[in-house]
Picture 1: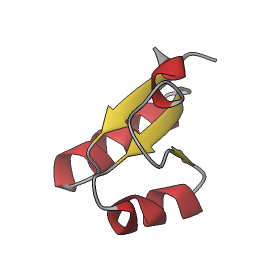
Picture 2: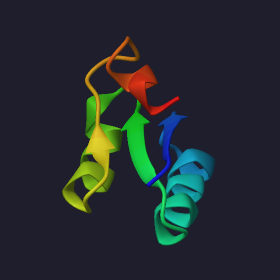
Picture 3: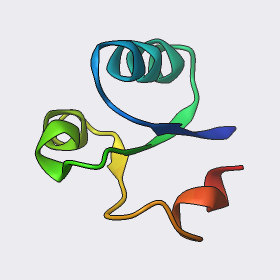
Picture 4: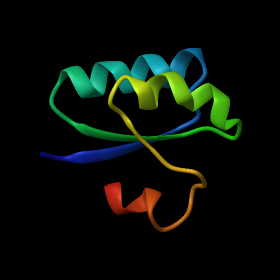
Length: 59
């Protein structure tokens, strides 16, 4: 499974993340406000607390 990272989970980022996961990608999400990333994490996305090395393992 190929992994990708989405930085920013607003309207556009959340939509892109949902399309990517539907197409078989492992998706890591990050948002400056962790509360915005929480719904995606609850739906099965991998959420990262900060955009550091752990997040970029997806690349």
